[in-house]
Length: 301
Image (cartoon, rainbow, N blue to C red; front, side, top):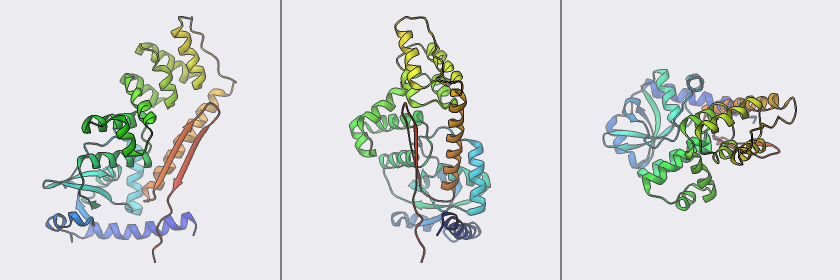
């Protein structure tokens, strides 16, 4: 079966299920409390769900949320959010964007999986789910790592083992937090790479870091050229910004960024239908590598 056919089939089934959940109030609050340990899908009142205090994502694009809301309105939710009981209420663990989109639609209930879990397990799951399935930028990932380390007194090696990353990956991400907030904001806004961010870490002055990054963004300089600027500044030389390798360099860089943004929008749309999408990105001196893995939907007999 083609991917488009599978999406249509699953979307029709999901839409029917979600319409039924919105129209019926068959699962009472008492019933929900009784099945916490059974991990069943229930239609949970949205006003009883509190935000995840360990949510690593700090920026939510309103346009992207609106697109997700439109998709949910048309196709329904194929992957329920995950919540855990907290006293007389529930705390969201996974599904922040889906919950926000449903609030935008004015939904009173949302399909949810009730799961008993500790603070540490909830924090890890929230971070891992966002890293694997959404486009957290590297600063948000770094902040998520730092939060886990501080909240649960973990060493870098322990965190690396628990989330399936190398210790060097954790360490490199955490170093980025030494950059001032305005520097991080500029890098994220201009869609500069993590390696660009690491290059300017060697400069202690925030104003100089920003000046270098403005030059990088304006001229479309690669990481090696950025490192050359930093090296000259550290050596006390007069800054001579290297020119891009060709007259088309800036255009090419911008085209790549546009493609990257378009790919993010595509993966967001796929996830909105309930498909599991895992995106891996790597940048070297020679190329950008983006791998998108889409888990095949389970067949329904």
